Image (cartoon, rainbow, N blue to C red; front, side, top):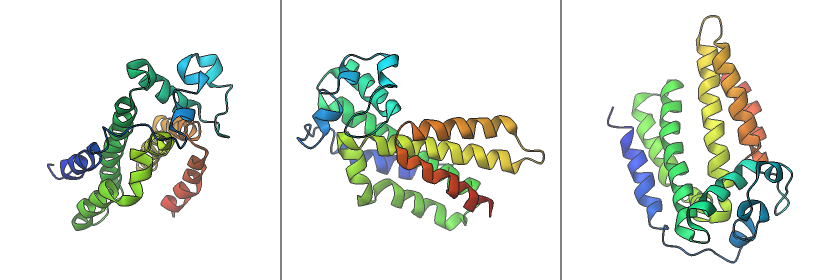
Length: 188
């Protein structure tokens, strides 16, 4: 039971080093403090807005929340990404358990997910927040989908939650569409 906390704590410690980073000139301001949907938040405008060529209303809501907490203080945005990535690490561990991955591999795989350098851009770069956010919803969807498939008659509430999480993932970043074929692979 303690093993799940090893990758979670490592993820937090690894990326906490970036909490004091400033906003970069590459898209950070355009995504957050220069984005009118973030600075003048309303649910109506967030769902009618494209920014930097993307339609990601749930990402803009995350940025709006961070903006309400600290305006242009970069640490709040970094902390939001860090907390989502840390939670994703916990979800990856749970997913590996649910998939019945060999016990000796679960911890190393979760640690690799937690601290792998490929995570740096999405966690440490403020404008990359959409990646940990859509990942969160895709991981939740996969867990709920497996819960649905794991029951004898099909747990339709879990299926509905999986579908809702999938839609939320797509509203965070369009790359979430890869979840559908991934779930087909899980079925196979």
